[in-house]
Each structure stands twice: as structure tokens, then as C-alpha cells.
Image (cartoon, rainbow, N blue to C red):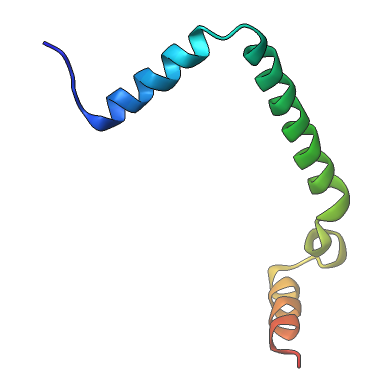
Length: 72
């Protein structure tokens, strides 16, 4: 019995396409490594954990966030 649902057909389409690639697999690997490094760098340098380094209690953190959101 063959499964003929749309999600299964989409999966098979991409599965067969990636299976038959040669150079494309290496390019996708490079792309995935590049994205991983980019997001790691973004997380470390551009989105520091400001609340945990400057405030000790949850009340202080929540008060700071409320002040920042309601500030005009």
C-alpha cells in the first residue's frame, strides 16, 4: 500500500533530491556550519545576558524590565 499524502510526497521529493547530490552536500554542510558560527557569534557578542550580570533577584530584574518597557 502506497502512502500518497502531500507531506509524504514533499518529504520524498527533498529526500531523493539530497540523496542524489554530490557537490551540493558539501555546499549545504558549509552553509550549515556558517550559520551555526554566525548565530553563536551573534549570541555571544551582540546579545549578552544583561539581566543576570546586573541584577541578583527576580524582583530587580522584573522592575528593570518594567521600567524599560514603560519609559517614554
